[in-house]
Length: 336
Image (cartoon, rainbow, N blue to C red; front, side):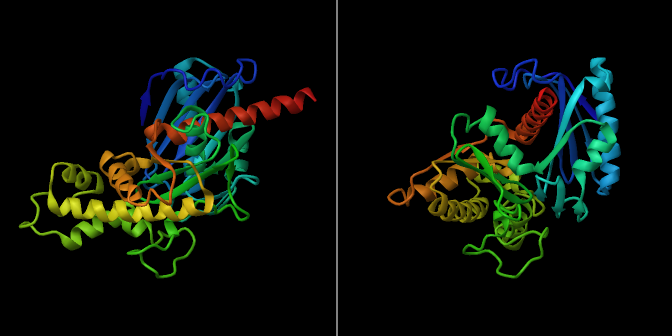
């Protein structure tokens, strides 16, 4: 397990110190669990992280969270009673109202997991749960690249692809909580084979990390590139910036395909801003490749493309803001 020290203020203007004592934000991933303890102004005072590899069972993840929270409180010499709320993001379709993770392909096939109820039972404080990409959008809206922008789309591009959609300053989740599952979008070059909910989709097969790696391996030969056949997407994009022709081919296909997805989404939503996040979305090679394609269609599409300002912390910052809102709601109910 890894512990990290304090970070500077997230958005000290957003909440008063009286609104909450401390809150916990959690980012539950397919390979890592990250926790942050923040004060009532949203300032992170301590962090903790651990591996979720081999611990996909929901109860095992809750036990890890307990271990992490205990360590955070120990590091800061705070009692559990100082925590007013906890919020967590999960990588999959999540019912934010009931707090149930409906389906995810990245946590050993979680289905209908009552995560909010489990968190409240374990920690004895109000809890909230949402899709991790929605939380990343919330983080960027409050303290990142979309601060002050009430209509935008956050695109998380990593192993998978998802979108957090903000309309009139509010997250749009859809009637069955699946808004933004653009990894299943059908675009030129994507597989048209039907997939079950929670399984990787067509767009992910071209632009997601595993899809890019598979494309690289299908075209690779030692005569075409000195880069290893087993290179990952980040290494391929890095190599593209260095002028490797094969890496540039793969990058251009990924960039064009993602640009098509953005173009189609813009035609429906007219969002003035798309924020690219995730481990691959922030890569300058991919950001530039997307911009080039969209510039070709500037007469039709009018939007701005920016990399995430929060980077890997977007989901965690969003979870903190959600936890603060949860604590404030509970406080308001107590006053009433």
